Image (cartoon, rainbow, N blue to C red; front, side, top):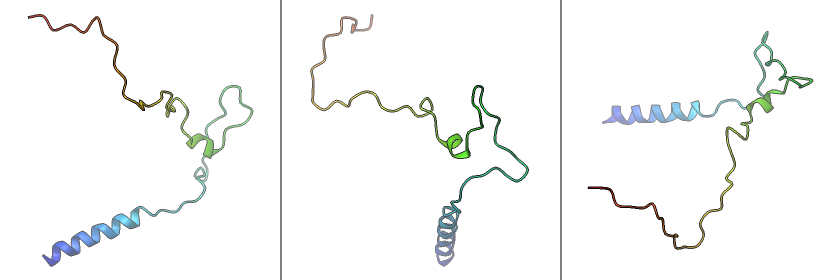
Length: 83
């Protein structure tokens, strides 16, 4: 029983330590460079801009949530399945 408690505590501590990494500016490794500038751009984008997801990758919500109950209009194609 003691061994199980020690094992769980070890896993919890190691998980906590793994989650608190250093939070510095992200830079390319020494000897590496950022990707080439996109077509039409004068300079390559900085690393922070490359890390931001595009609108296509994370679209914003464009529809409004249903706030009140509304009756649905009838659906002419909602037919029972054929036997």
